[in-house]
Image 1 (cartoon, rainbow, N blue to C red):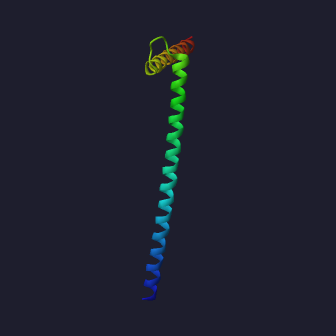
Image 2: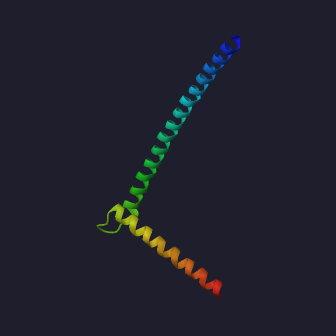
Image 3: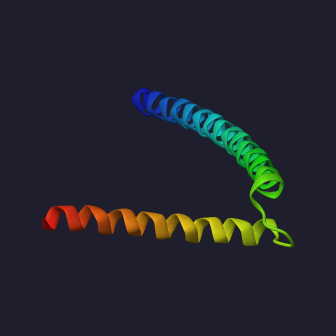
Length: 90
Protein backbone atom coordinates (compact mmCIF):
# COMPACT_ATOMS: atom_id res chain seq x y z
CA UNK A 1 0.00 0.00 0.00
CA UNK A 2 2.72 2.46 0.97
CA UNK A 3 4.72 1.41 -2.04
CA UNK A 4 1.89 2.24 -4.42
CA UNK A 5 1.67 5.78 -2.93
CA UNK A 6 5.33 6.27 -3.63
CA UNK A 7 4.95 4.92 -7.15
CA UNK A 8 2.01 7.24 -7.85
CA UNK A 9 3.86 10.22 -6.39
CA UNK A 10 6.92 9.35 -8.47
CA UNK A 11 4.80 9.11 -11.63
CA UNK A 12 3.26 12.52 -10.92
CA UNK A 13 6.71 14.04 -10.44
CA UNK A 14 7.98 12.38 -13.62
CA UNK A 15 4.97 13.64 -15.60
CA UNK A 16 5.50 17.16 -14.28
CA UNK A 17 9.18 17.10 -15.21
CA UNK A 18 8.50 15.72 -18.69
CA UNK A 19 5.80 18.33 -19.21
CA UNK A 20 8.20 21.07 -18.15
CA UNK A 21 10.88 19.85 -20.53
CA UNK A 22 8.36 19.67 -23.38
CA UNK A 23 7.30 23.27 -22.73
CA UNK A 24 10.94 24.38 -22.70
CA UNK A 25 11.60 22.45 -25.90
CA UNK A 26 8.62 24.07 -27.64
CA UNK A 27 9.76 27.50 -26.47
CA UNK A 28 13.31 27.01 -27.69
CA UNK A 29 12.15 25.53 -30.99
CA UNK A 30 9.68 28.31 -31.69
CA UNK A 31 12.29 30.92 -30.72
CA UNK A 32 14.82 29.35 -33.07
CA UNK A 33 12.25 29.25 -35.88
CA UNK A 34 11.44 32.95 -35.42
CA UNK A 35 15.13 33.88 -35.48
CA UNK A 36 15.78 31.64 -38.46
CA UNK A 37 12.86 33.09 -40.41
CA UNK A 38 14.04 36.60 -39.61
CA UNK A 39 17.56 35.87 -40.82
CA UNK A 40 16.36 34.22 -44.02
CA UNK A 41 13.91 37.04 -44.76
CA UNK A 42 16.59 39.65 -44.09
CA UNK A 43 19.06 37.87 -46.37
CA UNK A 44 16.47 37.56 -49.12
CA UNK A 45 15.74 41.30 -48.96
CA UNK A 46 19.45 42.12 -49.22
CA UNK A 47 19.94 39.63 -52.05
CA UNK A 48 16.98 41.02 -53.99
CA UNK A 49 18.21 44.59 -53.54
CA UNK A 50 21.72 43.62 -54.72
CA UNK A 51 20.42 41.75 -57.75
CA UNK A 52 18.09 44.63 -58.58
CA UNK A 53 20.81 47.25 -58.32
CA UNK A 54 23.79 45.45 -59.88
CA UNK A 55 22.75 42.37 -61.86
CA UNK A 56 19.49 43.08 -63.66
CA UNK A 57 19.49 44.03 -67.30
CA UNK A 58 17.31 46.80 -68.70
CA UNK A 59 13.62 45.98 -68.14
CA UNK A 60 14.40 42.70 -66.37
CA UNK A 61 12.71 41.83 -63.07
CA UNK A 62 14.64 40.55 -60.06
CA UNK A 63 13.07 37.11 -60.42
CA UNK A 64 14.01 36.95 -64.11
CA UNK A 65 17.56 38.06 -63.31
CA UNK A 66 17.91 35.38 -60.63
CA UNK A 67 16.64 32.75 -63.06
CA UNK A 68 19.05 33.94 -65.77
CA UNK A 69 21.98 33.96 -63.34
CA UNK A 70 21.15 30.45 -62.17
CA UNK A 71 21.01 29.22 -65.76
CA UNK A 72 24.36 30.88 -66.51
CA UNK A 73 25.88 29.27 -63.43
CA UNK A 74 24.59 25.84 -64.44
CA UNK A 75 26.07 26.29 -67.93
CA UNK A 76 29.47 27.26 -66.49
CA UNK A 77 29.43 24.24 -64.18
CA UNK A 78 28.50 21.95 -67.04
CA UNK A 79 31.34 23.35 -69.17
CA UNK A 80 33.81 22.95 -66.31
CA UNK A 81 32.72 19.35 -65.78
CA UNK A 82 33.13 18.64 -69.48
CA UNK A 83 36.66 20.08 -69.42
CA UNK A 84 37.52 17.93 -66.40
CA UNK A 85 36.14 14.84 -68.13
CA UNK A 86 38.14 15.63 -71.29
CA UNK A 87 41.37 15.93 -69.27
CA UNK A 88 40.69 12.58 -67.63
CA UNK A 89 40.28 10.95 -71.05
CA UNK A 90 43.69 12.26 -72.20
